[in-house]
View (cartoon, rainbow, N blue to C red):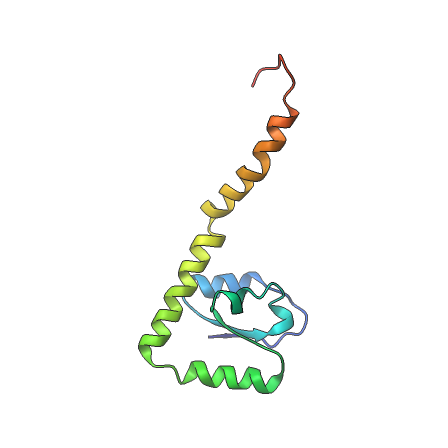
Length: 109
């Protein structure tokens, strides 16, 4: 697992790198501001040090099948939501209306 004890960093690219290779994330709640880790069950997001410690223990004690399912879920999440293809689709969807709006009649496409 990737253990983040930061109070301020925010959802970092290191999280995405870990998740992409099937490594769950255990972090502080304020570092998971959109609750991505919790909502998508990609690890644990703890309020305090005690809960953080308990979360680490829970992942440490997981059986292989449960951990492998979690690892696959992490990889699937990143591929579906943060891959270059997924991000390119989002960018195209955001830019298409702007480009269409900026075209003036009689101008070449």
